[in-house]
Every structure is written in C-alpha cells, then in structure tokens.
Length: 335
Image (cartoon, rainbow, N blue to C red; front, top):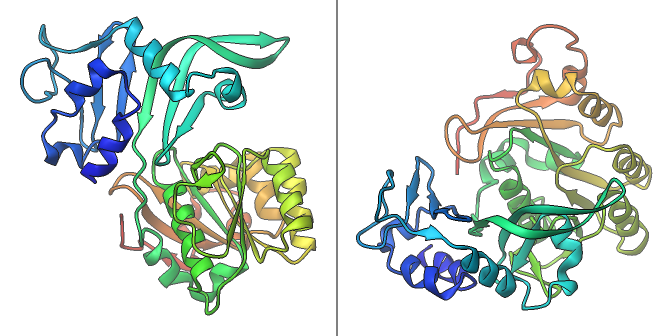
C-alpha cells in the first residue's frame, strides 16, 4: 500500500512531492486521496478524518501556521505533469473533469469551464485537484459472489450512495468472472467511459481485470455496449453508473442478444432506487434479475442485502427492506 502512495505522488510538483514523501509509512497506507486547493492547506483524506500536511512534523487533523499551502505554481506544475505537458492530447478527459495517469491513479479537476453553447469543451484555470490513490482490492467481491453463486451470471445491478465501493466491487467481479469463478472463464467486456474500472493508461489497463477481459476505454456507455455486442461477442458486459435513455436502450438490445449485464447506479436505499425513474426503468428491462444494495455506514464495500428485481418493483409504497421476499439481508464482508 505504501508503494501505491509513492507511485501516486510521483506526478505532484516537486515542492509538494518532497513533503508528501516524508509522511510516516503507516499513514501512507491509509491515505485515499490528496486534495490540492489553490492557496489552501494540502489535505490528506483517510477513512476516519482529513489530515493536513505540515512543513515540520507529521500531518495533523488541525491546521495552523505550519500547514503547507498549495500555491498556484504548484497546481500549474502538477497539471502539466498530469497532461504529459500536452493539454491538447488530453482534452476529452479534461472536459469531463478528470485525468488518469500511470498506475491507475486519477486526478479530479476543478476550475473554470470553457463552454460552447451548453456543452463543456474544456476546463481552464485549475483551482483544485483531487488525487485519488488507486488500490485494487483483490477479493473485494468474494462475499457477494459467494451469496449469489451462478446467479451472478444472470445479471446484477449494484446500487448505493457515492463512495461506498461500487466500482471496487465491479472491478473485482470482472476479474473473478474472467478467471472462471462461475465455473469457466467467460468473455467480459468492460465499457469504461470514465476510466474508473480498468484505469487504462496509454491503452493499457492499470488494474487486473483477468485474462478474458476486453476494455472499451472512454466509450460513451450506450455506444460502448452496442459495439461490444457487435464486435467482441462477450458473455458479460460490465459498466459503471448507468441511467440515461441511450444507455437503457443499449441494455435492452444487449438482453435481446443474450448478453448478461452487470452495472452500478447511485441510490441511497432500495426505496430510493425504485422511486427514481431511471432505477425503475432499468429494473423493468429485465437485464438485472438481482440487485445488491450497498452503503458506507459499516465500512467501505458493505453489502446490506440482495434482492430480486421483481420483488422490488412490486413495492410501490413503504420500505422495500420490510418485504418478506428479500433473498438475502445483512451480508457480512466489508472490504
């Protein structure tokens, strides 16, 4: 884990990198994100709190006069290094607010939007960055797979709030299916619109997705699903954060082609999922016979229950968790 931190900070400007490398090894292992905000203290996001980098001594939860501030030149140099000193070559990612770099690490970008009508075409004057340290968790999906067994191959929707670990589970599901967890290796196609599952860098996935996985990096999900079906003959298609009409139409075509789909969607609870128009329509496609609900109340990657999609759709009022038709509740096995 310490090595992952060191590889993540290699892209940071030299002044801040020297200070970040002095962080105690045990703390390096626990840092999820590094926050750089112009003329503000450098933040280190851990599971339990935000710490601040100091010029002298270890990071602390409170910042004072000794706190290290990110200067405009620091952000400018870091941004240039993220782009390999070629902003033009990375415009597609930049306009979507992120950059992926070697090791699978990602930088979320915030600044002034450059628009053409209602469409964002770029971001300039970068004012803050969120450097997310990539840590692939092998076995993250094992408790879920153990509960579903071969039913996983029928299709699954992972639902939960942001930051609960949906993408981490998707990544491990891809790897395990590709390696043969369902009895034999299956062809998996990952439609990775924002590069969060495979974290491809110069065409090479930085995360291990198994030996039978094809990655459509940067493809809009709707187009990517259809292209995967037409060109790659997958057994399973995996994508992240679905919901718009074009994606739903592509999913329906995938079902008609005999392909299983595994995907994720934002929803704070099962009740919220069925009340969201997109969530309800997705369940009605029949592409996702099973729904795994997640939360972040008991740790990263916590599964709170597995449901039959049909039973969730039958819950028009009240709390779907109260149904007697729930398949599994309270799975243990946070990652």
